[in-house]
Image (cartoon, rainbow, N blue to C red):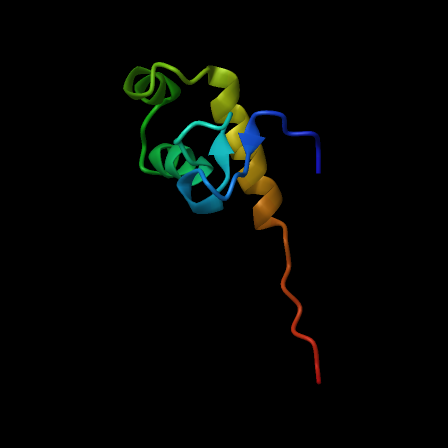
Length: 75
């Protein structure tokens, strides 16, 4: 995985979900807004403390997580 400097995880913030720069905005919230048709401008207007780079990094993180494969282990 590339070095994602804007994505943070802290068990005391949003239950440890991946967030944008330690804020209470989760990667899932950003990606969900994009998936539901909101533009970058819409998101930046709703969350004025975010930067466009935050949106791109949230997408990069989601793409990386989508590539993970779970393999069941035989006992």
